[in-house]
Each structure stands twice: as structure tokens, then as C-alpha cells.
Image 1 (tube, rainbow, N blue to C red):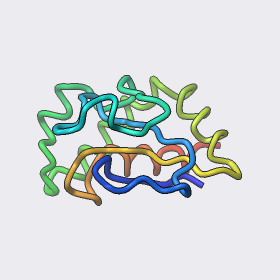
Image 2 (cartoon, rainbow, N blue to C red):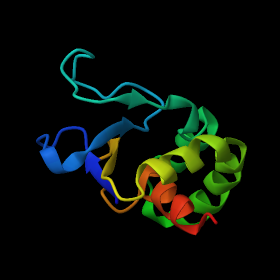
Image 3 (cartoon, rainbow, N blue to C red):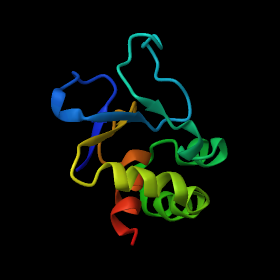
Length: 115
């Protein structure tokens, strides 16, 4: 099962494999303090897209559309996440305060739509 969680939330055994999907390291957390198995910064939104979006819910639909086009270049990595989450828990970690409008939400949706 593919799950989402903020990096600032408590770690749980139910998290399974923990993958950070932010392009930049989360503020206020030392690298040695974040329990994660992988950091896939290459699948995060491009710097330009991230700055344009700026977590503005008004831009959410357009952000999703643009970001999914960027994710098209990472299908192999995303397919591996899909395989890893088949029958096991995989948690995508993100730092954004907004739990509904962030890249992890789009990644989960994208993976869910993969054949």
C-alpha cells in the first residue's frame, strides 16, 4: 500500500519503506535524524515548477498537469515504487505543510494510474 506522510510526523512500523520525495532537504531536520530508506530528489518537481506553484491551492490543477508531464520522464523509478508497494507498505515523505496540495499527492495519483 502506498501511503503519504509529512517528514515531521512520528515514524511508525506501518510506514514500511520510507521514501523522501522532496527536491530539497526538509528544514529543521538533520540528515542523520530523518528515518528514511531512500531520497528520490530527481522525481521532485523541477525548481521552476516548484517556485511557480509556491503551494498556492489556486494553481493546484495546473500544477498537477505540469508535474505529471515531468513525472513521465521517471516512469521506471515510479514503476519500481509501484512494485515495492504491491502487498507491502511504502510511505512517500514530504515536508509541505499542506497535506492536500503537494508533490507526494500527485506522485501517489500518478502511480495509481500506471498500468
